[in-house]
Length: 84
Image (cartoon, rainbow, N blue to C red; front, side, top):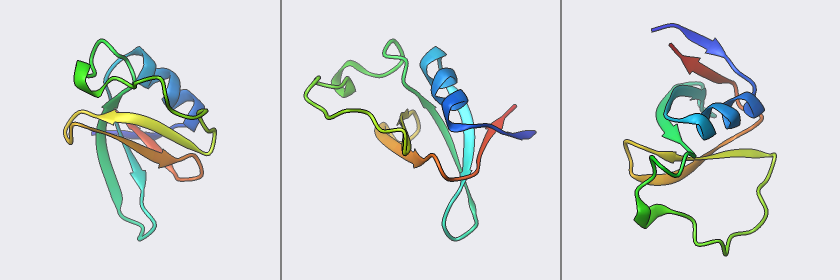
């Protein structure tokens, strides 16, 4: 698997387009692999946002973690890598 560094805004775009395999460097220096999306056709209906949330932040990238079945986020200041 090849890992290519990606900016947080580019990750947001890819997550909106569909399912994305990516990884990010955690505080302890290890990589956390994730498979995520923000495309609502992929997110199970029971996990769709209710519309009552606050404004989105540029400080982090929110995504639905396909493997964990829950919403997660990664700080925009972290090193983020796209898997291919």
